[in-house]
Length: 274
Image (cartoon, rainbow, N blue to C red; front, top):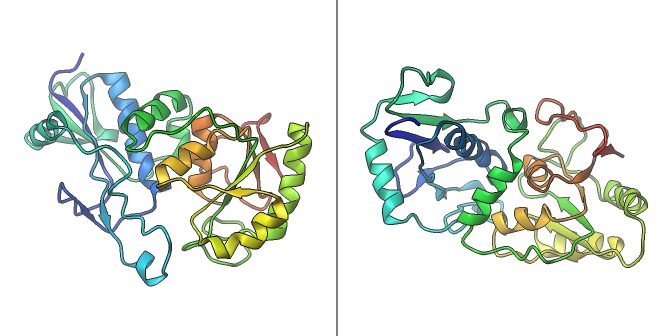
């Protein structure tokens, strides 16, 4: 067991302890958090909860419903959390890739950036999900049965063609993907739930065409954890979708034009394309 070892996710800089300036969306913020959770499990020491609250301007300019400031996603830091954060400041800081477990008995391991996406953590979904559920400010009702989760990403995503991420998927694709999902699941009276960052009026037509209800989770983390409970997940080109599939270890339907291999370790029996 390492002595005085702290695992510190740094989500963006500058990190002013109570809040950060700027920063990406929740899907990308979860990567350093997840690697820190896994690091603490493997090496021992203390996991230091990150500074989640961030100042954003683009979300206000675009009038997005979710301003993505993330200050109320997780429980407030306890006195023990603040104490660990304080003492982590006085340890020698070591980037995760430079940590030497034979030499660095006392250190603050800093986890920052996207790393190798899900390839870094592919065997650790249960550990990471457990940590997120425990820290979530709003508890998730895992007894809710969702047959098909549908992630419709809008917000800052471009409405354009291409194979990369950050691109909206047309409504017609979701309609076809839902038909495929229903074939996979089978049975009747399937419950379909749309999870989206867009305004309700923007997806009203799609929800009616899908015969789906729209998720009413109080924040993005609860939405993510709830989406992960779907028996099958129809994804967007988004790491947020990937997190839901990963945390729930679910069957997923992906847009066949989305080149996801750089982010995602392909699962032959669980990753379907349409």
